[in-house]
Amino acid sequence: MDEKILRAAVVGAGYWGPNLARNFAASDHWELAAVCDLDADRAARVAGAHGGADVETSLAALLARDDISAVAIATPAGTHHSIAMAALRAGKHVVVEKPIADSASAADEMVAEAHARGLVLMTDHTFCYTPAVRKIRDLIAVGELGDILYIDSVRINLGLVQPDVDVFWDLAPHDLSIVDFVLPGGLRPVSVAAHGGDPLGTGRACVGYLFLPLASGAVVNVHVNWLSPTKIRRITIGGSRRTLVWDDLNPQQRLSVYDRGVNYEQIAADGEERRAATVSYRLGDTWSPALPEQEALGLMVAELADAITQARAPLTDGRAGRRVLGVLEAASASLASGTAFIPDPHRELELSA
Ligand SMILES: NC(=O)c1ccc[n+]([C@@H]2O[C@H](COP(=O)([O-])OP(=O)(O)OC[C@H]3O[C@@H](n4cnc5c(N)ncnc54)[C@H](O)[C@@H]3O)[C@@H](O)[C@H]2O)c1
Image 1 (cartoon, rainbow, N blue to C red):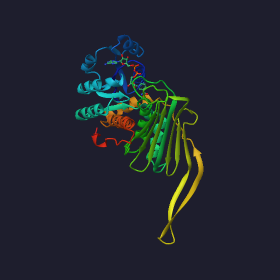
Image 2 (cartoon, rainbow, N blue to C red):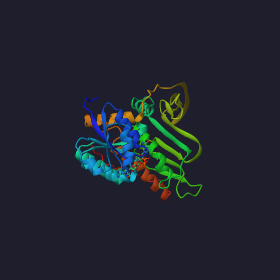
Image 3 (cartoon, helix red, strand yellow):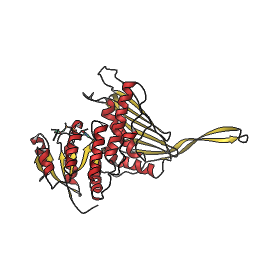
Image 4 (tube, helix red, strand yellow):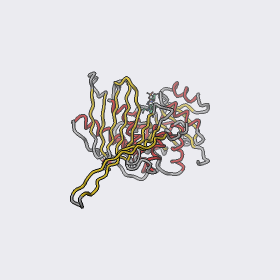
């Protein structure tokens, strides 16, 4: 950790902004300098909870200050692009709540602006900073699971039918950001097929299935649903060596690693003329990795500080946010056309942050 204390401002003091403010205020890396909201009372309530932070109602006045190095944006998604662009142009590092913007092209502009100015642009993909998801990423990186064969993610519950977005845009950003984080190289599907159901006639998909084949031959499936009376938050990651299950609603055993699976081998039979397949099953142990108790947002703000002081891209950078939006846009196109849709990987800006 760098000794230097950085100063942050939180823009947006509604439901989520106070969580950001609390974590900046509690961090060894940060001082919470200001809270900005169009609603002065809201900003004052949040600033007052962390004595000493200033209240701002004007974004322009906030960005004109030279004692603030980073701005955290927790306003509605439709405002992310304009606030982030203004902050970057004012020379501030930026962390933006998910989704990073309301379109992939808006995210592209933000990524390009940050790159041109040598500033950090981070997306708060909060789940990626939970101890469980960080552990999954580490286990995959060291080859504990072997080659990834499939990922199956289920996020279902009785949810609010949203007025403006369907169930894919509401829930799947979480699954997609986690898959993007744990897969080495990020989530880059070769195509996106979405199937949605609207059995209540709400005008938008309330039940959704996403199928994302990867270039490696692995497949990712995401199931999201607002109409389920049971709540499930589970990701299964099948590998050639082991299979991992993350059950976020089981605090006693969030992660289970199964040394069980199928071995499939083709061997030459009768010389080279014929080939025969052998199938065998591994029935080994199951273990549960120990996980520290840490608040994800605390790790997120620490990662932002480290990225700034080390002049490197954060773990969930602007491009990660953009990849998630690219898949969501392809999912919407697939729903509208009834066919699998090829995302536009060529548009992704491969910039060194
Ligand atoms: N990471 C997570 O798990 C998580 C959870 C919840 C919400 N979020 C995200 O956080 C963001 C905010 O969501 P919310 O539920 O807190 O919304 P909210 O509506 O409760 O709060 C938004 C606040 O932003 C303020 N605001 C709007 N435009 C502004 C502007 N131009 N300048 C200053 N303030 C402005 C509003 O007055 C309001 O107080 C969204 O992007 C949402 O997706 C993330």
